[in-house]
Image (cartoon, rainbow, N blue to C red; front, side, top):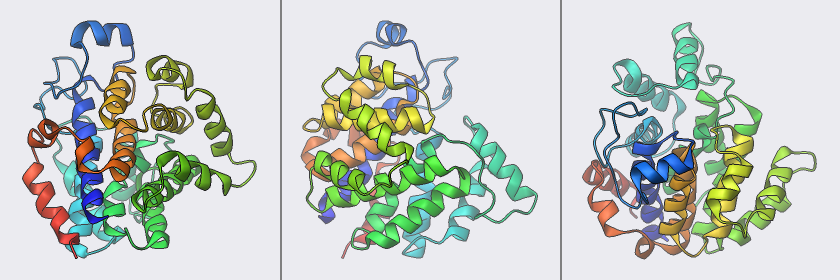
Length: 302
């Protein structure tokens, strides 16, 4: 399980790096024409959201996920105040795109709000996607994982849909890491969701689109960052490509929109299921922070 947990972590970062150069391109025909099939890391072109970064680097989502990993590795667990401090330091002089949720949270912290109170009202799924290092940290303690996943989400995305999504995917990741297939894990976790929760409807809609090719399915389910769209797209990708991590992540990128937030979760779940063999060695080798990530992950070896 420990090996799959590390594979899960590295795959999540690789998915973010794969999506980075074409992140938030919504026109899928234009994306395919200009970039071809994105199955390898690329340089972000001029005019893109992440221009100035180099191949193998992360979006602002991946950069925040790295800060979370650094925090839990240093503290040997999740400590909100430590994560908040490191997160603020990341954006003190950040050379990259800063989204609205981040700006709002920084403003709230600057006004004296505590990390528990400072979160924006954004319903973007990215706040939940960032949780993956917590699964490595709490792979033997589901309750602690759920609590930490919700807290780290709330710090920047204090929206009930995003916090509920964080709980859902924390449970799915934990169950997959412990031997369930992604489909089985989603079925079991979904069965326990309260009636009336929007997640029930999202799951049902995503399952209906499961057999469809992901590019067309996500065009219908929604390409955006917002949880009602991105949650369903992640579930569709996991159903459609449960046996093939590479195909899942490439199709995710080719579907356009917020491919980074979706890809992090898809990669983590599928790598937790399949392990290292599912991840192209070239992707891992070309991650700019590969050695640093490996060093941090080693803090959780038993």
